[in-house]
Image 1 (spheres, helix red, strand yellow):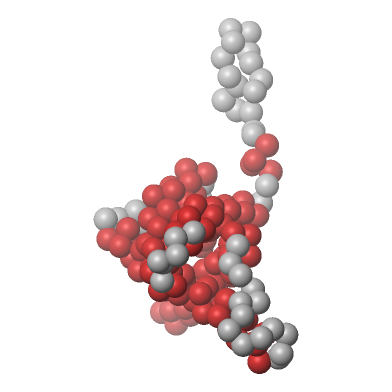
Image 2 (cartoon, helix red, strand yellow):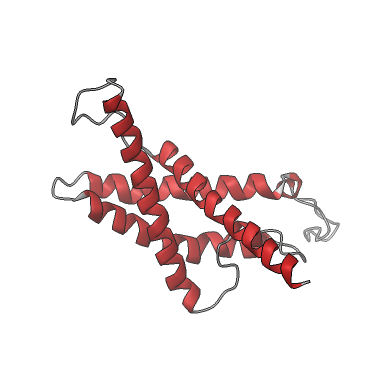
Length: 172
């Protein structure tokens, strides 16, 4: 940080993160938090032998919803300038009381979708004869879980964007 003569920070200096494009920052933040939640919650609960797959997916969805509403969306709101450049990266960009519960329900659906993606890949590997029946070919881990989670979230955000454009275009 550059300092003036009286040791005050320069308020007009542009930081290094301002040069990174918004989509790169948004993708990295969403992917990193998804992997982090899986690492802390999914792998932590997965270490217990009594955890059912559905219980794990349910807890992951609830925690993802809470993390998204309390951390990710607030980070996006903090980083935005005079324009709402991060709003397309949030399913519920407004900050209301009910959006907390909407985020939990939305990310429950995303978490179930990611579980089905893993299941479909493992079933395909069994049908192709790559592995024996009942063997898990692709196990969950934070990096790939974050990728699948972001891709699922991105699919629904793209659908929301297309629907919003279609509704706004038809009302003109």
